Length: 304
Image 1 (cartoon, rainbow, N blue to C red):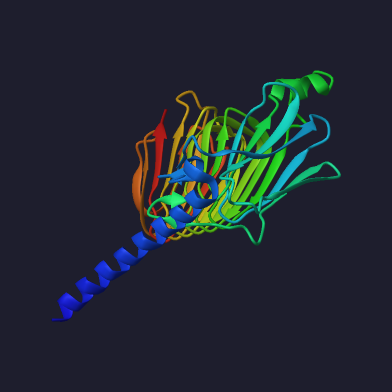
Image 2 (cartoon, one colour):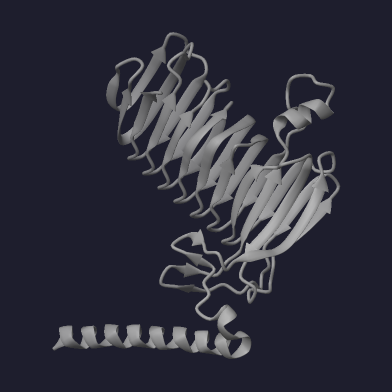
């Protein structure tokens, strides 16, 4: 009897959700006709063709030295610019009128989520905005700074969010600071010239990049990164249950790893070492140093 009641209640909830969804779609149809009927912002995490650029702002290469974003669930994607301009686009669906604010303050670009933003979620369809930021290449910054061979004035990014995912694609940043509850950071063929700092509860760090050094903490998020070049600075990762996995270049000149865990285990392909709970492992030289501390998370170091 109890099982039948639970099953009947589940069917009632499903029917109510379906009716509510199609009622909303019919209202939209009455307002806009076929153009907006059955129009979704994101399907399974990907924007469909019905989304559009709702807001666009452009800045000169010398105007902005840092990007500071305070977000809720809006994803950000950093991509290369086609010229020497910084271009910011807000992408979404038209009926979501409360757009994130974009403004310049001294040499910083500020992006702030609207507190009244209309958000919806229905069986995999998410109505939040996406932010796309195009950044000039490091070579253009070098050209603007007397050709000294380093992108000294490349942009630093500071991102604070609840659940936003951040994608860094084919660009160079000077520094990256990321704080989130459940958002991920995904790198693709990118470079962090100085330091990558992060603090997440369940968000993952993954992809491939050249990173000089990193400092971060996570409760259950994993760190899985392929280094395109050898790290230069000492790095730290603290976690409760998140695993730490990195792929280092075969020609790395040396490094050391100080692993400390309550129940996690350790394996290093460079030295052939394996251990449980604790180990101080050196490959050729002790610098740069990796300090990995977990409660139950494992540590793996692989060759590229």
